[in-house]
Length: 348
Ligand SMILES: NC(=O)C1=CN([C@@H]2O[C@H](COP(=O)(O)OP(=O)(O)OC[C@H]3O[C@@H](n4cnc5c(N)ncnc54)[C@H](OP(=O)(O)O)[C@@H]3O)[C@@H](O)[C@H]2O)C=CC1
Ligand SMILES: CC(=O)N[C@@H](CCC(=O)OP(=O)(O)O)C(=O)O
Image (cartoon, rainbow, N blue to C red; front, side, top):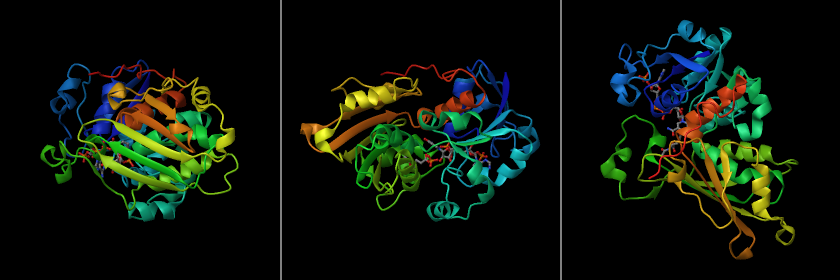
């Protein structure tokens, strides 16, 4: 049994970590932090955890966290990077759900996140935590940077095409939509029920901070990588709580010699416990992954034309954040990859 610490336990990804970890056969949460709720029992704030989590929130404290085998950061960007040097000096391993260590170029990070990076010296050590692409490096990592929610769904949809050099990497279009829990628990007017229920809109059209992360990952996916991947990424806000739906469009490089795409996807993910390629002709729904760590994908070539359409859905809080973080923990500690994650989606 390993001891787990969570920094940022009152947020949506923090409480999702607790929901899953309290049933994990080989991990026990022993420290859970919140500055605002320090001293309060977890079950007072989250009654679904009553009888499952017998802990109080505490102030973030490096000494207490350093006694854990692994610490999850479920904090806004800019937080993990400041605590990281002291925490890693204790020898504990770290899984960061925030964006702090996802982008290899510290200046690019500073540009998109509008602040200087507080710990550039550890960026090169961080391993990007998309298990479907990086399992071997995750296993031995001391610091794992979990992918963002949109980047997870977008990459899983596009990787098979880019890895096989089937599509033009410079003309990728990713149209994505997320439920409101993607924005976190902090009060924001735009996230009020009265502001977004019964309505649908795009945001971040001129530039969203997930763009450089997606481009970096898709560029890495190409074997030759001669041309940088260039993506048009447009996120939307869906009037629901959980779920991400991504529609990606990619133009075939050689439409006349395209292989059977359904087979390409099925073969790419045949051994993946958390990627489900749907049978030809079916489309994925967000409700089919709600509360689960699954990504469901379908691929289609409408009218046999040059543009390939890939649909991918995840739960932003599970495969898009906390479930994927636990999947990474399982890999790092040599546990069954699906330990604690064998959850069937909640439908209806
Ligand atoms: N929501 C989602 O779908 C996804 C989120 N992420 C990322 O995961 C991270 C957490 O997201 P989410 O759970 O939505 O965020 P929330 O805003 O819901 O929660 C943030 C948590 O961090 C704590 N916190 C805030 N500031 C600090 C600080 N300076 N020091 C220590 N703790 C702090 C808060 O508690 P307190 O202030 O009391 O200490 C709270 O528990 C973010 O980086 C987010 O971008 C990634 C993928 C998907
Ligand atoms: C609906 C909504 O607002 N979604 C958030 C998702 C960002 C997120 O979760 O941040 P990271 O994955 O980078 O940590 C947004 O667009 O800012």
